[in-house]
Image 1 (cartoon, rainbow, N blue to C red):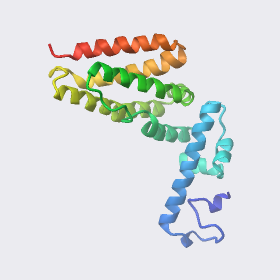
Image 2 (cartoon, helix red, strand yellow; image 1 turned 90 degrees about the vertical axis):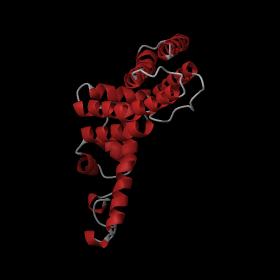
Image 3 (cartoon, helix red, strand yellow; image 1 turned 60 degrees about the vertical axis):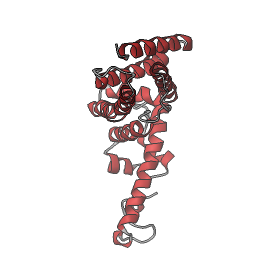
Length: 220
C-alpha cells in the first residue's frame, strides 16, 4: 500500500483527498490502525519489544510502514496503543465466572480464572512488564486499567455479598478488591509464569487464600 493511498489520504485511484467521504476515511483509518494493533501484539509477543521491527509489523498488517509513525509516533507509541486496547479488552476486566452463593468458593473461582488468563497472555505480558520498567507511560496505562476495570468489577462483586450479609458491613471493600486484584496478578504471572511453580502448589495457595480472605470478611 502506498502512503498516498492510505486510510488517512484519498480514495485509491484518484489523487484528491476531497474525493472521499469523511466517514469513509475515518473507517478506513480505523481499520488500518486495528490491523496494525493486531499485528503488533503478535510480533511483540514473539520477538520482544527491542527485536520487533516496524517493518515486520507493517508487513503482517499489510500496510505501509510509514503509517506506524503517522498514527502512533513510532514503535513505542504503537506498543502503548496495543497496551491500551489489550488491557481494556483482554485483561480479564468483568469477564468473570458468574457469582457463587458461597464467598470462599467465589474467591477461589475468581483467582483460578485469573490464573488461566495470565497463562494464556503470558508472552505479551512479559513484553509489557519489561517495557513498563523503562517507559512510564506503559506503567501508567497498566495501573489505570487495573484501577478502572478489574478492581471496580471485583468491588461490585464483593458489595453484592455484603448486601446479602455475607461480608461484614464495615469491611473496607475498596482496599480488599485492590489487594485481591494485585494478588491474582502475582499468582497468575509471577508464581505461575516467572517462577514456574507447579499447578498443585498454586492450587493449594488459591484454596488457602480464598478461605483466609472469606473468613476475614465474615461478619462476627
